[in-house]
Length: 349
Image (cartoon, rainbow, N blue to C red; front, side, top):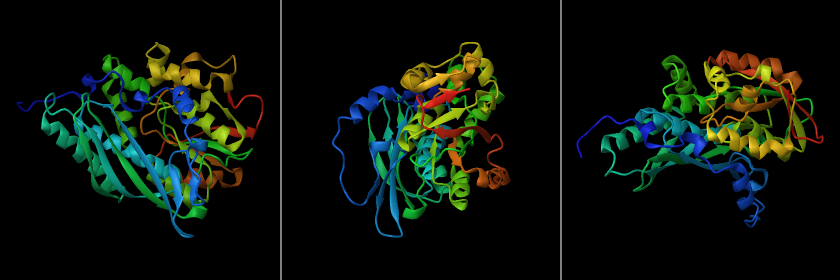
């Protein structure tokens, strides 16, 4: 076929992490799988954490994860960058350093130019290089629309592992990236979003969580997760359940990407937001004063979203100062706190 300019976003119904299976359906399937039993397994699917972790020895544990999805933007190179940043994020969320990666690629050469295939791979490789990791190969199959991502192996010292299962009452909840990616992508498909706002969303998705991970390790934080396809509420619920606590989240303090609040208030809400909200509904208490569009943004599916950190009060100032000094996370916000376990897991205020 002749070479042509292609808009990847026009090939999909759901893009990025919005294309995940509904979390409730996934949880039901995973609960029926046999548990893996091995003395070196440090983290498995039991706590629905960001990745699996296997202890090699007293000095090194392996973090193993994978993520792939349909296009979340129009440009092939940027899609590759975003998919790679998202795949790397699970390693960073657990305090690890990415080491190796394998490409996972579904692409139809009969329906799309091979130049798009190459550009997606080039974008992915650029982010893996930025992370200091190595791409060792991969696997491709014929499929349309395209899907791309990576399997990533990282390393961490076993004593410095960060999980979603160690939140303590009194910890402050710190979020490093703004919400609203799902809304912006939906609005872009409908030609409702300003170019500058959409560009800010793309830049956030391409931003590695590397610097947040470095700050967490420096200050010996023990609990965090990254906010991706299940939205802030979905990932917060998994953290609350794994840690046997409840979480209070203040909607007035949520960082939100430019124009996302306006679009959500106008009803531009992707289906994933409703699926995520349905998943947490039985564990969620919503204050009657919470504005409906902010509740939906708390459920908005993020692609390559930020880190949700649990920070002890005595470390808060230093953590915030180092995040600011990195120059990468200007919209970092304290969005709530960890509570003792109560009747509901999440309190949206």
